[in-house]
Image 1 (cartoon, rainbow, N blue to C red):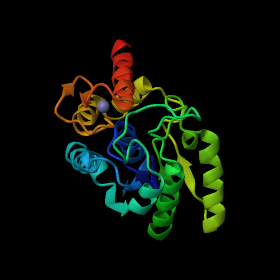
Image 2: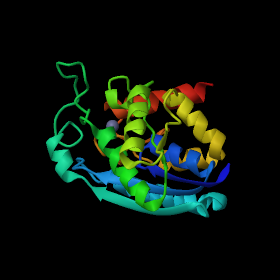
Image 3: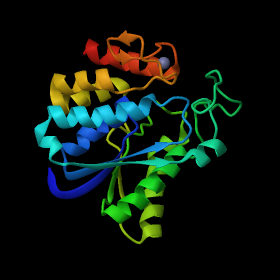
Image 4: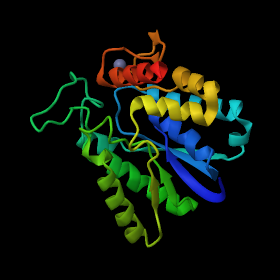
Length: 233
Ligand code: ZN
């Protein structure tokens, strides 16, 4: 626990970023959050991230004292340039380059640049992001090498050290559930199941053991499989 450290968590409202928020609150003295709208097909994630912050503050009083302000940045212009199955109504599939069409080109690079700019003004030199190369091997901007290169570029470009923490980088989805349990026990796991949102289709009518979702899109498949792996251990 570093009481003097100030961090900024990229909070999307999904399972991974919710776990990262808890991880940062357990470790750093002051934690703020940032989110982005870029023309996603539905606003479910935006509601999920607000609920996540409110529930974490209500259920974990120690963490509540460290949780600072939130900001949502409008990147709809970028989203229009980089349209994908997340921003347009199209079927989920792989493209000719072997990338899933849920890939929004440059998304993590843009998000981290925005976060670093906000962090520079707010004196939050540590950025925390839930990127993971284990399960999302199709997303080249989630790789450790990409993140390391960007931390260096941002540190040089801002002339001020920028650290990028990626606590989930080498975890499977099952291990991410285990990490949430380690950080906040059943209460945190229940909170993530109930309030975080992962489904690409924005479906919240169907409740499964692992939370809400269509049960059929790539994001639901990953989340469900991770849950089963964790429950089996
Ligand atoms: Zn789904």
